[in-house]
Length: 261
Image (cartoon, rainbow, N blue to C red; front, side, top):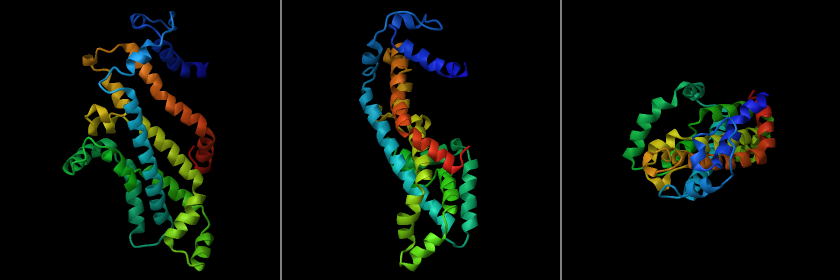
């Protein structure tokens, strides 16, 4: 029964998306009526730019954010977990402290900064922070994982003439695969579903990501129907559902081995 209660809203949305627009407003707990795909064909091109562009934009942002988080967070974790330098505890404390800062507090200064460098209406504000290891949650996750890797591996590599970066790239990074998988999975899901960031930085329709495009369908100027909005909402879930089924093994292994309960 609990499972039914959880998936019922999704099933109800899918059913409504296949109803004619005239029947959507009067739908009951389980709508009866004909099945039609008109909401999908019309909703795809309701806005001035069709949803192909929006899906591509979301994919580009998600892939770049994924690359940035994997590289920057893993390198930062290696430095903080393995190297010894002055004020290291202070740097680590600052990283952890950023977890306590609400993202909304940073919106105005970040917006002004990107506005000053002319990066508005580009994907730079959405991607660049990922390459600067701003997601402290993933940095902390990887630090804890790196600390569990025996230091004898580093010492053996040093004896063979390897430098810090070579040790990171050839030894630590391959052993961090479970933590990297967890980071990759959550980065893709959170970035794909992100609404606030793209809404603030992107005002040109051709640059919208899928969540912002769905919000644009709520505008009364588009003359849309509720059925079209539901249809596009269903389609927005398809990539994440496919991604989950493809990566479900890595999701379970990454969560269990990284200590996320």
